[in-house]
Length: 317
Image (cartoon, rainbow, N blue to C red; front, top):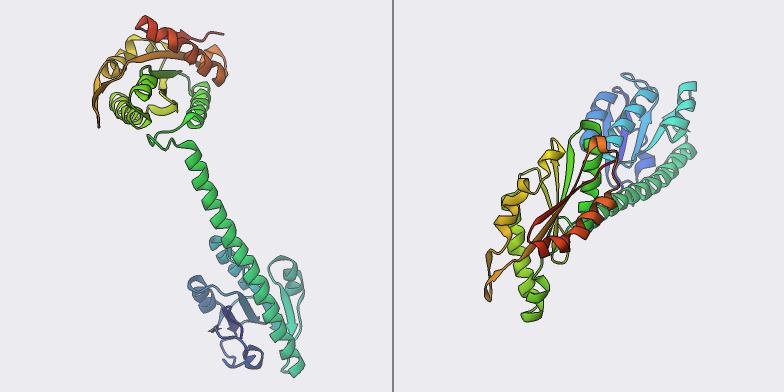
């Protein structure tokens, strides 16, 4: 018994039981009188095999076949389309290459009905295979999208990770090249991160990082991107109207808001001793290499903590 849904589209004057002998093995079938009703029904109930009686009296064979293809394309579904009639016209023969899968000549001869039954079964198998593969592909794409998203997110903080920071920095550089302005790459290092691990454990260090993460997010603008770049270090990507807004004074508020503050953890309050460095570039400086920006900010970070200052480097042509 054929379980795949089959639709039969007949002339409005035709007997509903036409082709019944070819459909005895079909458990799910829907008969439509006329093309308009068929298209309305197929919108709601897609079929694996569609049999079109030729000629229809309210639409040409090829027109309805093309309309079915459009409906199926929107929902990524495949239907095996068979046209049955006494003689194929040129349009039908051309349509077999474009939107029709088979033509079966029918004039109520038993062998022709058996041929139609065999074609229905073959079409149902093909449609099932194609539709199953489509669903598997969609599921695979969805899983890949989740994996891709997970690869961009730091599991501890829920912030973007290093890869996300690099992508965002690259996008921001392209943005200032087309619209003007400046991109500012700001790094924040929790310098006592390793000490907390040594004195307590990794869980306590993670709690400190989570607290610092929340604090930084409270201190930045909604459009600023905060990422957890690597263990103990955050990276921020910010776009400013000009490079004059990429100075230590402009980001002193973030530094003062995080540095030497005590954060509540399961073992009590722990301080965060931070260093901060900035590397900035503007549009007319020429397209900077994002790795140069990142490397410059990283190199200045250790010196920033030792000097107790925000170290700033503006890239120039």
